[in-house]
Image (cartoon, rainbow, N blue to C red; front, top):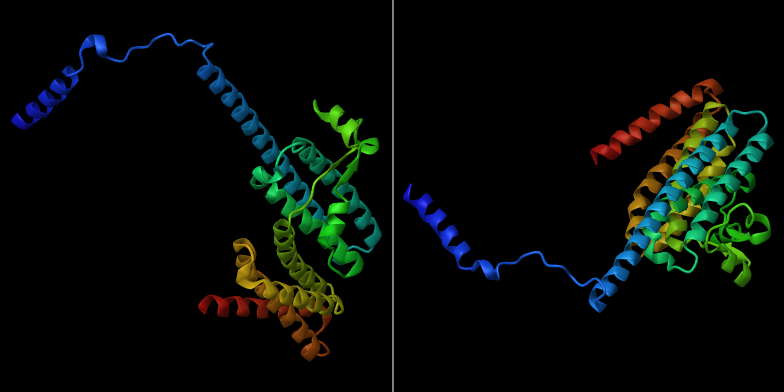
Length: 290
C-alpha cells in the first residue's frame, strides 16, 4: 500500500514540478511563417508521391492479373487444334497489358523510375514471363531484353488521343513518345519464372502424347540453367533464390525425356502422363527428404 502511495506521490510531485503558467498549451501558430510554408510544401510533395505510388501499385496488380490470364491462355496450345487462333488472342491480351504499361510510363514521366520500382516490379516480371512464354511457343527461343523494351515504346499518334494525362500535352510536344524500360533484374526474374511454365507445358504435352516438345523444352531449360549458373551468387538475391526452383523444373523435364526415350516405345501414349506424374512425385519426395 505504501509503495503504491509512494509511486502515486512521486507522479504527483513530478507533475507539480511544472508550474501551470509554464505548461505546454495549444497556441495559434503563424501559418504564414517561412517554416510552416516550407513544411506545407513538404506535405504536398509527400502526399503527391504517396498517391502516385498507390496508383502504380494498382496498375502493377492489373498488369499481373492480365499477364497471368495470357499465360493460362497459352497453355491451351498443347491441347487445342488451332494454334494460330490462340496466339492471336494472346497477342490481343498482351496489347491490353501494354496499355496498362503505357499508363505506368505516363505516371513515371519526369520521375526517377528506381524510386517507384518496388511498386511495379511484380507486374513487370509477370509481363516478361508472359511475353517470353509466347515467344518460345512461336520460335523455340528466348526473347531478349532489348526486344521486350522495343515493344514498350509508345508513340503519341497511336496512344496520345486515348490516354491523356494532365502532363501529357507537354510530353507530346517535347518527346512525342512514352517509353518504359524493363530492368535487368526484372528480366532475369521473369525468365526464371518462365521455366516453371515450360515445365507445366512439358507435362501437358506428355499427357497429350506429344513426344517432341519435352526434348525441345529440356534443351532450352538446360541452356537457361547454364546461363543462370554463370551468375551464381554474384547476382541479386532474388535471382540466386530462384535458381533452386529452376533446377527442380529442369530435373522434372529431364525425367520426362528419360521416360520417353527409354520406355516410350513400350508405354501407350495415354499412359505416359501417369508414369511421368509418379516419377515427378518420387523426385519431390527425395528432394524433401534431402
